[in-house]
Amino acid sequence: MTGREPAGAVSPTAVAVEVRDLHVTLDRVPILTGVDLTVAAGEWVTVIGPNGAGKSTLLRAVGGLLPAGPAVTLFGTPIRALKPRQRARVVATVAQSPAVPAGMSVLDYVLLGRTPYIAPLGRESAADLGAVHDVLARLDLDAFRSRELATLSGGERQRVFLARALAQGATLLLLDEPTSALDIGHQQEVLELVDQLRREHGLTVLATMHDLSIAGEYADRLVLLDAGRVVAAGPPDEVLTEELLARHYRANVRVVPGEHGPLVVPVRRGWKQGPPLNASGIGRAPC
Ligand SMILES: Nc1ncnc2c1ncn2[C@@H]1O[C@H](COP(=O)(O)OP(=O)(O)OP(=O)(O)O)[C@@H](O)[C@H]1O
Image 1 (cartoon, helix red, strand yellow):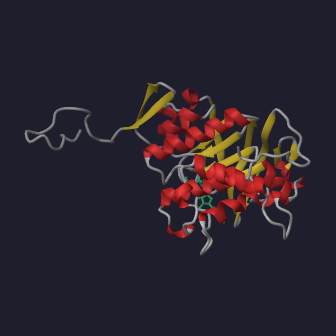
Image 2 (cartoon, protein in one colour):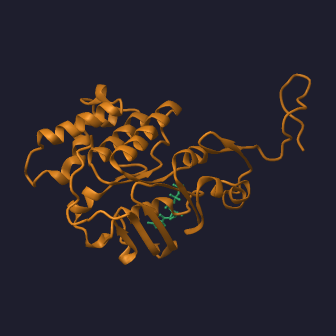
Image 3 (cartoon, protein in one colour):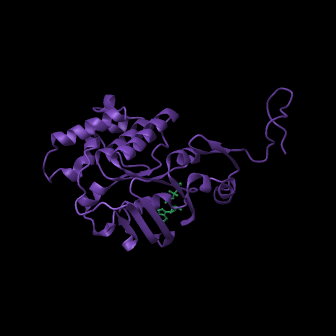
């Protein structure tokens, strides 16, 4: 469906992502310290953590957008051994706020995802166009194909960014807060599509998310990052605990069982739960 093709020199292995003792320093500030992470082929792992924890930095290092030395291996090959075109066939990234090229149509933008398959100075093939049209249809973007990307709403644009990554046909998808601008219906639609592609085509997904309930519903495992270190990792019900979320997010939450994983409900601090409301029904007595 996404025009996935052989990934050059990279051979299939049971491990999609191997990160060992990753240290990243930006402008002399240590951002990631000794991060270890393994993602099995076909697995969905979501990195959670408070603002500034280093989630995007970790995804950028895994995607080869930041130098990571020997610490990152994709499908058994050190990422620094992959040439850019080879890497683009293996890993596709949806960044948090990708640049929007001025004057570019949605169709042309999504076609950029096919660049690793088009010879330099060559033209896109019928297969490239087919992959793009397929992805546009599945993301409910057909009506926008001729529109200038810059004129789309934030949520429409976010779906186009994902479409470009899917059109790339890579085996590993890195999604940095892929649904932050989407309404609740489109959130579910997009995440279900990613999960369906994972099941049908063996995609591996490494994501970041702030919505913890949604993170737990879709991921096989969660990795909790705080101040550049992994502080917890495991199945959602082991990581989404009231105690861990209080400690690392300084958040007051209740965690309740849900059909597809724990649901995290924020509870306002310093106010009594439930009645009594005052006589007019507005406001509660402070604790
Ligand atoms: N070029 C840079 N120089 C110095 N510090 C940087 C640089 N880029 C990022 N940082 C810092 O690194 C830290 C981690 O940033 P990152 O974007 O990875 O966090 P995050 O967990 O994704 O945060 P958020 O949830 O807010 O998106 C932040 O404190 C950020 O300010």
